[in-house]
Length: 215
Image (cartoon, rainbow, N blue to C red; front, top):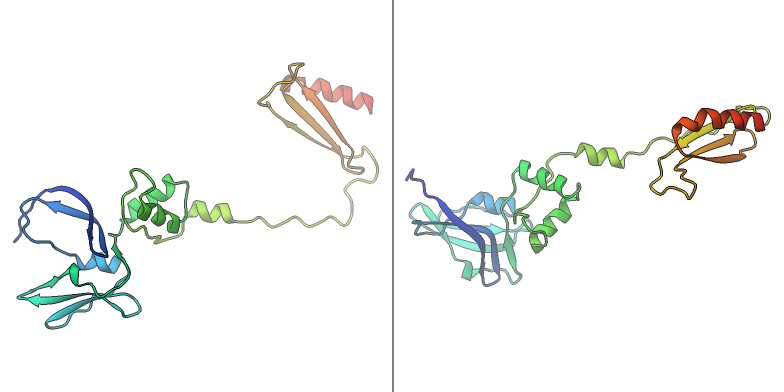
């Protein structure tokens, strides 16, 4: 009738073996209303006939049956034809779905739905979270770089002809002598490795001079 009413609260409705999540309480509304989209979001089918309607799973099994009265169809939860527990959850908006996907460290949507269904995470709304597109960060993290081809001809012909160096640090724990940087030098031909310890990056030029003099 084009009137608006505030939602006072919401919760889960349990009637026999039927559970409907996130049921809104609207003050002044004298009848319980179902949205057909709610059933569709729960991967169910809702065919309508002239005098009846059915709520079915994707295998064609009737779960709930409704009867027509004037222009409205009435469904009785107490007359469920399913012997197994039923649970209906509203579908989260794409914004909500991806927000919680990122909040939970890009958790798989199947596990997000499991956390929501089991009410494990405080603050996670009881909704059905659907992946409607690919996540760029997830796809990038799963990508693998092609391996480098092995060299048939070595780069160097003799020892000390080519050296590879890498300076790393600062280390979280400083040595007894106050050194927290590591300079690693690898001979390309023999793969012999030297490990030198430094107090700061500024020592690198002098350490290299002493190293060249030594070899």
